[in-house]
Image (cartoon, rainbow, N blue to C red; front, side, top):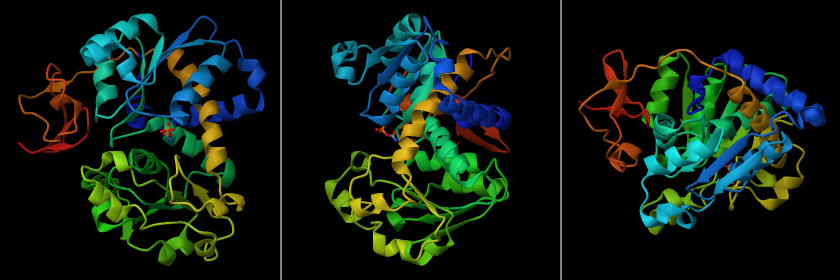
Length: 352
Ligand code: CP
């Protein structure tokens, strides 16, 4: 089975083909209106969502398929104490494909071990959000006619922002892209993402001012300060209003810079910015349906022969938010890269 846990699971050709097919579907949606007749998607959302959940559901309905699932695990037998593995095994027997969102890092990987159908990661804690990245790529490709040679400024919560982590990793697969990370010291991009950039031979800048860097950007990727990821309200309050995009700040930006945001927004983009033709975040959200239609088609029409060999260690993952530290029956799978070990679920380095 083909899963989408991390876009690293897909070749660049596959990703380009998913984007290309999404453009084709967008132009001729009626040609695809019955291709998933008889198929069911399970949308299991252990965390709130508007866009990802409903765009997956819309995507399957527009392809002629059907939808089951929950948007609050407390309305399922999770509330009676059913563990993650059992829930996934059961829904994997009902659905042809599952899109799962979960607050713990590595949850989609864990689901892929037990499910009898393909799993799509619809966001796992602060780790990754690959289908948002496909949405972002489609929007960038449509607007810029290229995915190479772009300077991308990421602004806001770069520490917990899974959409940022996924998009940075993906943009490294294209040529000559540059990154400017605009955040407070407390919400800087994690070291493991910086290490991926460095080991791929690319570089990045870290800055503290949006005003000082906005004129260098082809893309400004704004993000929300995510209240739900903070352990103290005081820490959140110190961060929440630091970066705010206003029409005034946009005066220094290039006329062809585009503004993206995975949404939801709280206060980080002033409502008046919505009228600027460079503001593409609503278009970006609507692209999510087409790219997810294309992804469902791709996954359900791809068979893979290879047997993935997982490396097991006795060591635990040090990341408290990794699902292996909550669902204790999970095997401890790791990847080895040079002399370092990385958790197969949450990608964090394991200190042996
Ligand atoms: N972009 C995104 O993931 O939005 P939702 O949380 O509403 O799904």
